[in-house]
Amino acid sequence: CMAFISLLTEYSKTLQRISIPFFLKQIIQKSLIIGTVSYIFIFDIEFNYFFIFLDIIFFVVLIFHILYLYHLNSFNLKLKLPKNDNFSLKQFQLYSFFSLLGGAGFILLDNIDTLMLGTLAGFKSTGIYSISFFIAMVVDMPRRAINQIASPIISEAFKNEDLKKVDEIYKQTSTNNFFIGAFIFLLIWINADNLFSFMPNGETYSLAKNVILIVGTGKLIDISFGLNGHI
Image (tube, rainbow, N blue to C red):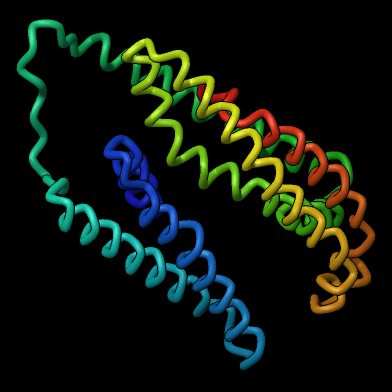
């Protein structure tokens, strides 16, 4: 289900209709997962049921994705290759291969710190680090939301050789990302001790409080440069 959700999200991006899919994937899906974990923890339910609930959440989100695309008259299960003399299946396959390779590289880049820490310091230290790391990654959410919407517009502007529009969107996204990200980072850092106090064994996880500061600052600097990665 997760693969299909990601696929439909990317498809929605090409249609420049990303707001609803992003809301479903980043807000509804994650809120339901947090609610499920809280429910299992509060009512002391066997952890095995979590995976059942997780499958149900992903399936429901997938159905809403499909219904939304169907509402836009953009959902079709028929696979048709374009009838165009300029279309090359070999080039399409080569492009897909490098896209897959690039995606794998990004996944490795995002997780290499966790893999190295697990090898050098053990799973306990990795768990403590990961909790603080994902708290800090909340700073990156505005960039993901804004970039999901802006990247198709940037691609269209490059296609039309409208560099003025590219420059305008780049500056707008940089400014918006910085101010929203800085506000979120400030809220997280001020309330970091309160966040850890709500967690079981919060004193243990609070040892990695500096991870929030370092990763959060790094992400804030990164998102301040707007759509540089897409451009």
